[in-house]
Image (cartoon, rainbow, N blue to C red; front, side, top):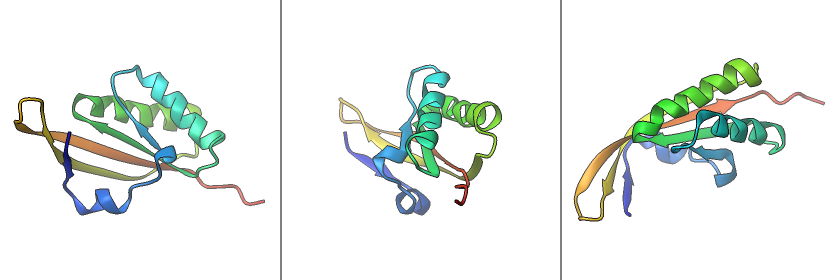
Length: 110
């Protein structure tokens, strides 16, 4: 399944796989748990929530739930939107919208 990312920001800001949460068809709270776990036990100060197509609204819900209910000091650092060209099984190419939401929190100094 070849993919092509458009937008210069999307390629520059990619993080390691541990800091990226890919949103799909599960309920939003599953992804909220993953984000909160990454911030607390993962030791990272930035998490990226990525989604495509119909999952974009679930990704936005996830970011807002984390920000408003669970970790109050999380800020939205950046939002990158774009279009990806996907080739399906029949060989046809279709465009799918994508979003990357960069959440960050300040580390407390010791």
